[in-house]
Image 1 (cartoon, rainbow, N blue to C red):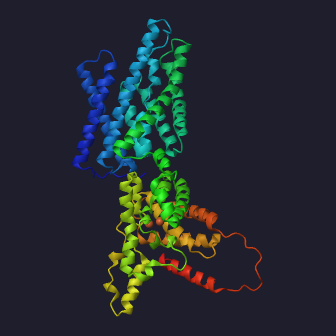
Image 2 (spheres, rainbow, N blue to C red; image 1 turned 90 degrees about the vertical axis):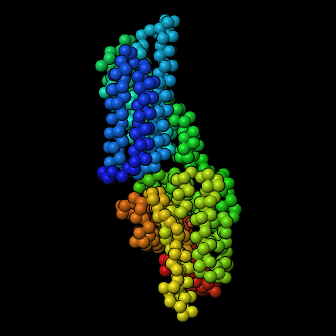
Length: 512
Ligand SMILES: [Fe+2]
Ligand SMILES: [Fe+2]
């Protein structure tokens, strides 16, 4: 966490936030306040005003402390508050249904010993928190947990107990959702929420004595019901948020990564070399993301789609060329660079055409950042020298990717893996030591180039990443133990030309 107290919010953002908080307070007061007996209009207005000030305080505090909450777009804050409003509506609805069931039970003498106040444990407080966590990330999920805790505790029979119960159980559910790998994660979140709520239910026995064993059991079972209603609500609401707000949950990203996606099918047919490169990178970034606490799902899916633009002109990329074939031999360096650079533009166009989530689309330009295609830049300078022109005349911008630089840790990881995997393919004898040396050399090169300046990868992260990349690449490319060779090894012409090609590839990647 990093402290940042700069007042950077624009007037438009402040107005959006003010309007969103006002809407949330008004809806909460209308729906939840109406369920409380005998409150005058003055009391209700002051109660809503107090809640407004508290929510604004939570926002200011989160903005100062949580880096993941700072500098978000208006749409992001608006989505968060709309989900809080949706949560208030869902909780009010469930509350009304439960009260109706109690009254039905009393009227028909089914059970008359369960108090209405015991039902507060069975309300789905964490619906919004789970949706926000899965679509907007952990930091916003935690802020939503605090905001929901403030709103719901105001209308609870025991506010201090409710504040602790809702805040801690929601944050617990949020933490489980950091690693959503299957629908089973929803069950896990529901059980974790119930488990964290249970001690609060037991504490409530001392504050409001249960009327019977059934009343006590209702509070404990209510915790379980609350967890499952929250998880079910989140499961139902998340697809709508993905569709209307354009965010992608980990579940949607996992569904995209099943290789049934038309873009990935096209990539595997048109550019098998690129497809293979993307799969290996997927393994590398997933492993490193797990180690440094970045989102492994975003990393893996980003890796699968990062080079989809290469399907337009696959044979101009080294990984799709047959030995001895190089289309660039007949092209001038600026033309070669133009074709290579165009895979980023083509990739973005395809991402938009196929409506890929924004987080994946953003990784397409960011995986190259503003780096220079060294091989063709150097080739152009050499040609200029040979023709008697000054190397200064070579326009560097023609060989530079448009950017932006990686803006997230996930995009930074992808940039590192992209260059390192391509370089590892060119190693003639990929032993563990050689792979380790190459990984370190490439990491240092990218770090020194300043391309990682705008993402939050630390030196400690880079150390972890180097270890993970080496482990994955060694597993894939490490040479098998050689069978017995003849005493005198004969170097064939083919081996000489293969070695020359390896050196050529390394130069192309800017390593030698
Ligand atoms: Fe690329
Ligand atoms: Fe790539």
